[in-house]
Image 1 (cartoon, rainbow, N blue to C red):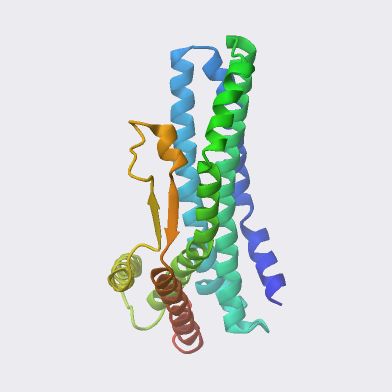
Image 2 (image 1 turned 30 degrees about the horizontal axis):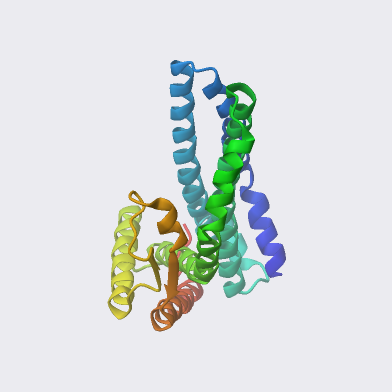
Length: 275
């Protein structure tokens, strides 16, 4: 039932993303060709277009997730959802997973667009500006041999559980606040109250964790500064994992997720008022 609910939520929202994702990918594909024309006005339009669509993508992702939660839980459609033979916690989880999928997809589209842009731009630079690959490849080889790419990849992999926990926590907090403002506890100005409650809770909960731990991942370049000797700094780049701080942050976010998830479930079961 959970899989079916997630599938239904994704099918109900995918149209909101197709257009903006397509626009970003198209800009990434044609952007390098526009740069190659050396027409300043075209380049300016492209830059503003990329910036505008990037901001729009972030905003649309956030607003679509909010609409998903609101429409599927707190509207007339939400009334129908709550009468279906689906457990309340399953409904909550499906909305969180759908929001997480779209957030992740947005990040992936940004990364994919950047890769397309970079590869095409480099290819055009080679084709039209006479860049000699035999001269450029030793530079790439030198960068690779410093080990900085592998170090950054390892540190990113180590940070994935924290990033995932933080993303889920943010979505669960959003569900909790939206549920709270749709109960008898909040009578008026629900939107303003929701924004204020979200900001206050987010700051308070993050402050508690911040005071309990330090940096989970610590980077160093062996005392070398990038702008003085970048290759030496990259060769000496390393990261260390502070396990106690790492576990405090991870366990703290998991406890937040569990607590806010339970509170959302309780409110939906006992205090929800669908308009």
